[in-house]
Image 1 (cartoon, helix red, strand yellow):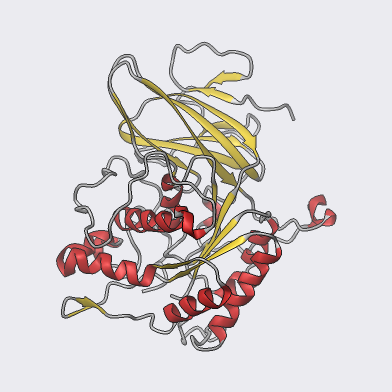
Image 2: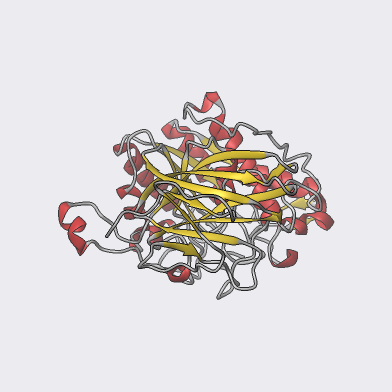
Length: 404
């Protein structure tokens, strides 16, 4: 199969050069060609898909127009936010760069696996029609007036931040849902590749039995960072096959996962689960009691970085109050566990604050335009960095999301 062009021209009138090709709006993705558009029907995005094997890719996008002002939001794979919306005046042109992780479901850990006999991750729900586990790199554009001139793709080797967790962490594709894991790339430096392996309904046990943990470890390299946030489903006694008690079993699982990461020469960050929106008398009650303490204690015993999202999200919800806090949650605020774009954006900012703090010892840098948010003084959810036009409409969730 011939190599693909590495530069794709999206604005009419640009002249293709060696290694580049003009892509017109009518060119839907074709496997034989290896590139084209996979826009969501009746959506508000332009999604360019390029055939790509597993690995990390440096994406260079030139934005702007000589004819009109523009506002463009850039997303990758299943709606990972890569940068803040880029707002340009008429005639202003800007080139931005970011790094995207691409993976498939094969768990390659040996030469035999590499010959096509590898086991595969147990995909669930709508993952088989999503953009995360396919053979493509997908870059999507949205916004009130998006304008993309060209997209350049180059395979690289970058430092990775890999994420393990559940529905409060995963790359949500449902229209009114989002999680902090998919917002995190926007707040980290553009040379970092964020690989979000989290999935709705997961527990630490199911992460192992579905081979998600094996998959994550197979892609883990010395110097990488692994973020772990479970608890919402591990505490469910009605799920006896994956339930673990907070006092003994849950800490043991945390330690086992941490040991796997350290054996690879990577660093682990333990994160307590985000709070549920459970108000009593104007205060949030802790429905995850015991599980947040377990993460806190294990992090202290192991001497690894700890992010207390149970406490910080409690602060965030109480600062917004019972009336305004639903505007941080999915399903028009009816969901009390899972967030929308606003809620996920605020939480991801705090995660990035801890990760990029020099005292963490992780050596990660924030995005060049990073500005820390204070959970006790959150921005108004009706007017913040992302507008409704920035948020790309993707697909409806095929089933109710677990975790309430």
